[in-house]
Length: 420
Image (cartoon, rainbow, N blue to C red; front, side):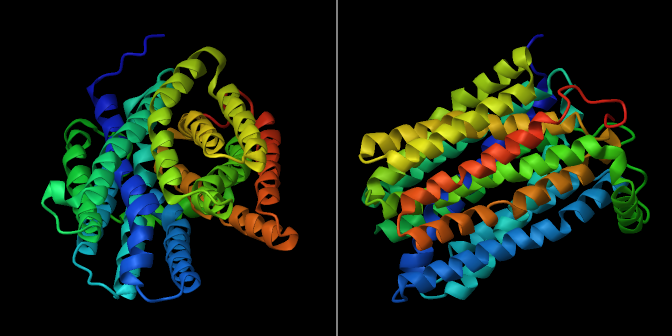
């Protein structure tokens, strides 16, 4: 089949370019740095880490609890794009506000971060569900992969600019690195707002997606209750979600704990920043390649290949001793991360009823929010019990093996009862 995509699909994919700046520059990059060194200045490292962990947990839990209900209401009112833009606007406003938080005000920074992450994550619920409005079952793998690939590239481009600002603030007319890091939040907000315009203009929900806007909350929550009662009619989607929970927990754990793992092994912060950049730029072509590969061998097989790569990553991570080996580890993550996410999204989209896509993607994102809860605990517990952080990396293999086992039980082609 042709891999050309039309304007709505391209506009959809560009939203990944827009919002990935937040996940890269803010979530993974400069917020943790400023939270420890600026907003929690003078506080013990363990205390600031605990505060940041609590903030992350609160934002994840809040979204996990409300995502299915939000999806149900958006489906009932035909308002998925409106909900997406509302979540984005909330996050953009909170990200902008971070620039103005003074030194030592960790509580204000934490609250704004929770709001920003919640808005970002909520927008993803509706963004994922719109995949069905801009693609067909034949093109969804490529459109999904194209979006994730643009996300890696866009997030990486702005992150490079922000790193240059941080390392050479005088070249940008800034007095110091801390000010440059604060300005990076404003750059993310502007970037996100500008590159959301194509989606605002060109993506349209298909006719019939909504069921009238009167009584949206009541109708949406009633639909949510109905789906919970009739979940057995969607056994294939449910089986996929169980497998997805296991393997995506492993993926998110490696992403969130990778920096800490590298520091535990004695690698420098500079090495780890370069590795983070490598993930972004390897992820761009690799994600496109996974989308192309899925057209030939199927999304399910592509996901299984990515799971196999992650198992190799865990084994490699156990034995690394030098910086070049850590770069190889980062390259492996870039190779598989976008593919496993994009193909999971497109494969799941073919297992669910189109008329309830936002609601079902609410479940999907709820699983994503609850992931990276058990995995980091397992890593910490294994490292604490054995005194060897390397063994904690090996422990993650179990998540990928279990996820693969459940995925193998999901039919490669949806049956009539699970399709739209």
